[in-house]
Every structure is written in structure tokens, then in C-alpha cells.
Amino acid sequence: MSPVMSSGAQADELRDAVQADMPGLMELYRDLHAHPELSFEEVRTAAKLAARMRELGFEVTEKVGRTGVVAVMANGPGPVVMLRADMDGLPVVEQTGLPYASTQTATPASGVTTGVMHACGHDTHMAGWIGAARQLAARKDEWSGTLVMIGQPAEEVGLGALAMLEDGLYTRFPKPDFALSFHDAAQFPAGTIGYSPGFALANVDSVDITVPGVGGHGAYPHTARDPIVLASAIVMKLQTLVSRESSPLDPAVVTVGSFHSGAKHNIISDEAKLQLTVRSYGDDSRKLLLDGIARIARGEAIAAGMPEDRMPTVTVEDPYTPATYNDPDFTETVMAGFRDRFGDDRVMQVPSVMGGEDFGQFRRADPDDVESLIFWIGGVPQERMEAAARGEAELVSLHSPYWAPDAEKVIATGAEALAAAALRLMPVSGG
Ligand SMILES: [Zn+2]
Ligand SMILES: [Zn+2]
Picture 1 (cartoon, helix red, strand yellow):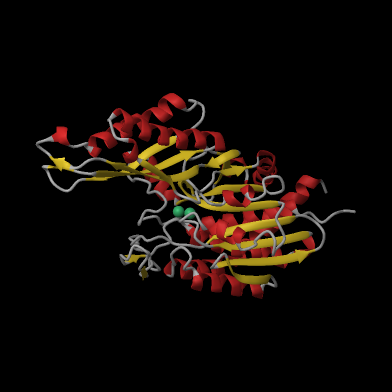
Picture 2: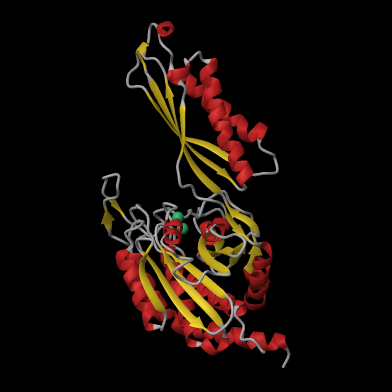
């Protein structure tokens, strides 16, 4: 039998096994979907995952990085492969109308009670991850190495991966040679796989600028220093960072998402506050943008005649979410396997995005030793995709209260893809 035929036969067997598992995985999915929890509050969720992994024979440690789960299966010599699922939901009031829609509420730090929803599809990630674990635990004679499966908290606030790393993910547990994860996607047909070699998701920086002024009467502007005019000049000048300072070949975004100042028509305020999101890929372009923001804020204040002791203050939130980088060779290795298994029409290279994902932390913690890849699994139901193509429906985005992926296809594809990738990365050595 040729190697090609042999891998094809194995493909069918794994796919059949995942399909046979789907009723149980869908039950888990519906349960997780109905009971979402906010970032770092994934207590029920983590307990569910930990119990399932223990049943499968993994050595499970809970509360890693507050609510994270680490499940290890050592199975002979070979590489360490880490598979990650994120666990948190979002403060969104679900409006999908699904029979298992979430009716959960929570009161986050803001103090405002809100609905909670798996509006980013992390429930599909967890179900697919459990599906992969079941396949890998059932065929330990087909791979050799160490499998580390992690349930990561708090992806939505960009802090969970770092929390797990700071709690000893790479010192208390085997450090991965390869780290893999998938995310559902709201723009691709259900069951397709999308990937971007190199930078896949962006550095995300949140920046606050406080612009002092000198308050006064609106009818006597010459006796005041108007922070609204100054902050407006800063906003306009910031537009030149991407258009005139960044390389046109290097993607960058500077968005002023919030501008607050003043209380009344005829009072010149004494302060304006700006909130920015700043996106980039490389460390150098990130530095160029952040340095430029500080320089522009100060420069405009000087131009407005502000005294040295009333310069704007620029604060960059720490920690930030670093860009997610897919090692190109590793990506190609995994995707070659996916193309064999799923066919060229289900596996496609797609453009990178300026969204963020803290999965990038796992490679960044040790870029010389850890290769990583995150890929997309399309979640848009076929009929919705077709209606959108006819102009009869709009596609909703992730985080929408209406996001209802074709969970069955996402989970089946995710389970099969993660298991297949792990099998390929941890072959039984022929000696
Ligand atoms: Zn999200
Ligand atoms: Zn997400």
C-alpha cells in the first residue's frame, strides 16, 4: 500500500470516529453555550473540562493562571504538542433565539449587570478540543510524545495566556515544541479552514491621553486654554502616523475610539480625555506608533502654548496583547496534512487581520523553542452564506448577539483537525 493510500485510509477512520462522537460533543457544546462565564470567572466551565480530561486519563491540574486547566498525557519519547482552547464568554445579551441560548447574567467590574454569551464561539473551541482529546486518548499506539492540552481563561481581556505562563505553564509542565489552536470565523463557510503564515493577528495597544487645558468662560476664550481644540488637533495630527510615517507596506491602525470633555455650552473645559486602540504587527512598527503618539501629543500642546507643567500625559496599558505569529514552516507542515485530509477546497490561505488574540503569548514567551499556529474554522451556516451572496442576508461578526455558528461543523472540523495535526507532529518512530 502506498503512503498516500495509507494516510487516506487513516483519514476516513479518524473522521468516522469523530462523527460517531458528535452527539456527545454537541451535548457538551449546548451545555457550555447555555452557561457562559466571563473572563477569569470560568469556574463551572473549567471544572467540566477538567473532569472530562481526567476521565480520558490525562493528568489534570486546575487553577493555573486563576481558572486555567492543564491536562498532560505523556506517551513515550517525542515532541511536546500543546493544544489550546479558550474558555470565556462575553458581556453580551444573547439574541440568537436558539433553544439553548444563554440566559445567564453577571456583574463585571464595571458594576453594570449584563447578559453573558459565548458570542465569540469559545464554546465550539472547547467542544472541538475535547473531541480531539478523546481521539488522541483512544489511539495512544498511533503517536509518541507528550500532549499538553490547556483550557485558557480570559482570552477576551487579553490576560489569560499571560496569567497561565506567569503561573508556571512552561516550568511546572512540559514546555511545548509546538502550540496549536483554532478560532471559529464569522466570514467563512462552516467547516472550511483558513490560515495566514507569518503575522496573523495584530499587536493591540490601548492608549489613554489626558490633555490638560485652562478652564474659563466660553465668551472669553483668550483668558483660557481650550483642551477641546487642542485635543482635536491631536486627533487630526494622529492621522498622519499611519498615512505619512508608517511604511505603506506595513499594516497599522490608530483609532481614537473615545473623546470626552466639557459639561456645558458656555464653559471652556479644563481637561479632555482620549482613548485609542493602536494596532501593528512588528515590534518596530509598534514602537513607531507609540513614540509618535507621545511626540504628537506633546508637540501639539507646545504649539497651543501650553506651559511645560501642563503637557498631555500618554499612558499605554500594560500588559498589551502581542501579535500572533504563525511560524511559516510549521504552518505549512500542518496545512499540508490538512490539505491531504480535507481537500484543497476546504483549506485556504486567508489575509491576516488587525484583530487581537492572546494566543501569541505562548510563542512570545520562548520564540526560539516554541513554534505556534492558530487557524480559523469557518462557522457561517451554508444557507446563510448563500443568502448573503444573493444580497438577502448580512453576515454578522464575532461578538454579535446574533452570532450562531454551524456548531456541528465547527466542532467536527476542529476535533478532527487538532487530532490529525497532533498525530502528524508526534509520529511513532520507526526506529
Ligand atoms: Zn472574542
Ligand atoms: Zn475569541
